[in-house]
Image (cartoon, rainbow, N blue to C red; front, side, top):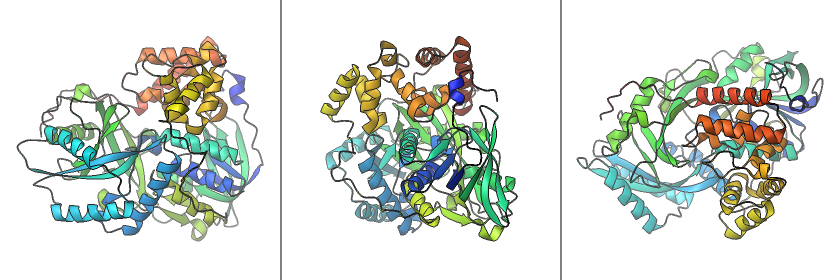
Length: 547
């Protein structure tokens, strides 16, 4: 890939022959969490990502932080406890990114799940998770849902509370900053060509900067393979023989629709047309429907939702809500990701455990190397602590924040007023910055005061501003326009984003960054290509989406 036209974008310090205690390969939520824990424990840590942080499985999830009601159904109490503990920690320490969300479980009279079993399971779930649902709000949302349901069927509707992280890309960015502050070195757009093995032990890695083409070697005491669905490829490139594959990739696809009339503010957990569980979730002023479970052993970087999956999800939505007036043409976009579940060829995807585990490669002739298998948004923190302990780091258990200056509630009116005053910006923009940047919102706002160009909106449909993009380049390792608009300041995931929005954002960011016209055009083209590959508009073929 060609070198960036702006020389400043290639000014990352060289890594050749640098030595680290821990080299983490993979910059999704698990890899960033591991790097953060290791760095905080005083280990010199290098974090590597072949594309951009959170660009893979993390950004293609259902975006919920759940305690694992589905795991309770399979009797996995330990995983439910772990998930609920981690959910509570995220809610308290990152309230600007992780929000409580009411869920409604809707089952018709043909469901394979008995009402008694569901009531018993939810009672236990609430006991473990300490439910905080308000009765009046529960009833309001239940009534909204019941008005949408098929009147010709008898439904049982149950409620429980979980949480949502609308933008896990932002959570990754925040953990990345925390890792950097603790002394970690991070490199995105850096491919690991091979893990180097000597005398039965992993000793380092050979890298290529994908933006400049420069190759380097680094040394490491421990190598952590946290690449998710790419885990087996890393092992193959290092000629590590694991016998069977470590990962059995399962494709999960979603569709995103406009928010339809009468849609509840709660998430709906229900059964698809084939009885599989699916979610209908309010997200980013839209509705997110997912997910599928399709075995997929192809290149995870090229994963796309199939036409059949799109039809299945839309048909399932209309099966549940026959009065909703949406068609295939209304779909804003569809996207897919590959879940890195443990290789289990004899099990159906829904039966494969969602537990993570750490594969020690000592028996494979690569001591001091660990591959992370599985994992999810909710438990990334506990996985990271387990992994850091495995490499000898002393880990302090997480604490719940009863009262701390480090925890910012972005909905507090006086906080938003302070942010607005600091940046000379509107209350709407101050609120938007607080919701995505938390305790760093004040620093972002102060930078906005530098000029009118910094305070300019990224596009007419958002309250987010150019100063946030500049902060992403300066402090959050963003290197491209796509890194910013899809992940650090993910306005391009919005319902109203259009080619004119892309053009305006590129021009405004380019002006402040000092890009040439050629550089701006190059960044705009690359961004649009990446967005189109990620967020697919289904084909315009007519779909008979009848239940």
